[in-house]
Structure formats: C-alpha cells, structure tokens
Amino acid sequence: MRVRVPARPAAALALLVAIALPACDRAPTVESRTDFVMGTLAELKVVSDDPVTAREALDRAFARLREIEALTTSYSETSEPARLARANGAWVEGVSPEVDEILTLGLRIAAESDGAFDPTAGALVAAWGWPEDPALPDSATVAAAVATVGWRDVERAERAPGRIAWRLGRPGMKLDLGGVAKGWAVDRAADVLLGVSDHCIVNAGGDLVVRGHRPDGKAWLIGVQDPRDASRIFLKLRLPDGTAVATSGDYQRFFEVDGVRYHHLLDPRTGWPAREVHSATVIAPDCATADAWATAAFVLGAEAGIAALERQPDLEGLLVTYDAKGDLVSHETPGFARYRE
View 1 (cartoon, rainbow, N blue to C red):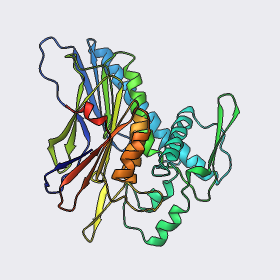
View 2 (view 1 turned 180 degrees about the horizontal axis):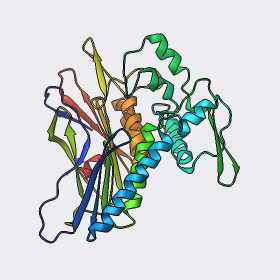
View 3 (view 1 turned 120 degrees about the horizontal axis):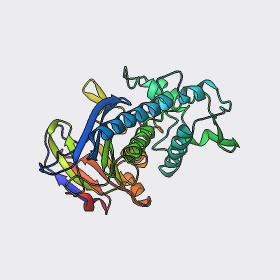
C-alpha cells in the first residue's frame, strides 16, 4: 500500500511518544520517570494504586536497563563485545545469558534480512565515528571496515549446560549490538514493571513496548512525531497488550558535508548510509525484534523492506520515502492499518 502526503520542508517520521492520557477523577496513579540511558532518553510509566511500590519498580527497571547497557555496549573495554573483539578469533568462554540471547536473535535476523541487519558491523560503525565523533571516511577506510563484517563467521558453542562460548571468526571483526540490545533491554525493563502492575509502557528513544492498557481501559495511544516539528504528530497508533514498536530514521543521528546528509543507519553490505527510506516503523510482539527489523527494513529499501516484513510472522511495518515531486510516500504491510488511530 502506498499513501502520498503533500510535501512539507524536511518532513519525516521521528521518535515515538506516549500521548498524554485524558483527565479522569478516579483513574489509578500513573507513575513515570525519564532518564538518559543506552545513549538515549528513556521514559517508563507504570499504572498502580501503590505509588511507593511503583517508584521502587521504576528504580529496578532503570537499573536493569543500565545493567544490559554495561554488558552490551561497544564503547567500554569491560563489555562483552569488547572481550570478544580482543580474543582475535579465539573462543570466549562464559558469555552471559543476556549477550547470548541478544546475539543469537541478532544473527537470526541477519540471516532473515540477507545481511541488511548485521550485529558484526562494529568496526564499520567505528570507521564513521559513531556515536561520539562522526566524520566522513574515505572509500578505502569504508572498504577495509566492510571486510570485517560478516554474520556468517560468528560461531556459538555450548561447552556445558548453561556455559556458552562464542567466537568472532573474521580478522578485525567487532560487534555492534545496539540495533537489537536496546529493544531487548526495553523488553526486560517491562518485565520488571510487570512485577508490580499488569499495565505499563517503556519507551527508550523510539523503541517501545506496552503491557496491559491505560487507566481508562483503552489501548495505549502512541504518536510518531515529525522530526522537524516535535509538536506535530505524523501518525497515531493504538497498541494492544503485548505489542512493541520501533522506529529508525535518518533524522535521529546525522551530519552534513557539502549539503549531503550522512546518517548512522549504515548498509553493512556496502558500508555507506542507506538512502531510499527516510523512516521505518515496525510493530512486533517484542521490542528486540521490532528494533532489529526497523533497521533491516530501512536498509533494504521500500519494496524489498516491505516484502521482507511480509515474510515474517507477526510483523507489520511502515516505510517512508519521497517521490520525484518531493511528496512523502508511506509504504505499508497489509496489516499495519489495524493499528492506526
């Protein structure tokens, strides 16, 4: 399905936000907290009639996010991706259950997307200087980084029950788990909140999961913002219990050189930013899957991205491009419309 929207200057989809609830005299308390974690702003909300217990759960949920960040980040010498990279192709024993599950999922989606999503692109991301100091690399640097990327060259072994080993089998290979770990962390934070309430929402920089419903009994209402006008909602989605959504776009992290925008969503097969799609929103049963597939669909492009999403069970998506006139065009999977408000 293709939907055209009249052109507006620099219009595209932005991050996801939970739309404010209507006032209700007898609504249960909604406790919320916002903090910076995993390189983005995270907002957690839990519906509860016990504010003290809810606040304690929010503390634990943020602690869980930070724990997963410490395990999976590419920017700490003590993280597991760093330990695997330092092994120079040797087996690394005692990989944590968290990284084992995240990397297993990432490699599965790499296979399903024909490498459009690839968790072994760490050296490529570093060649572009993301996220701290992005700069345009030369072609030789990009080619050298691409040579280190290859999801097929990652191996897993179970040495004993519960004792997992991994190895990165290509010289110079480094992991970048950011495209799946943030979504996985969002899922785990929601699990923490479910310990005190059946109703909560976790949003970390456009990776979002809902459990239960709003205090008024309705499904959670999510807005996708226009990145050039944060006050404008481009799209509203009603998300039922157990639904996750993630958005990736070329407006989130980028720099410009001679009027050309270079963003952080790199095609791991070419080493350069993917160009056709400007935003990808994916709905899935869990946020880790939505997170990785939003990146994969963005990189694949409109036609191939929608086709790939349609082949996956329980996934729906919307991809945004621009036509020759500069009009915004949305490309949707057949089932996406049922989530529209």
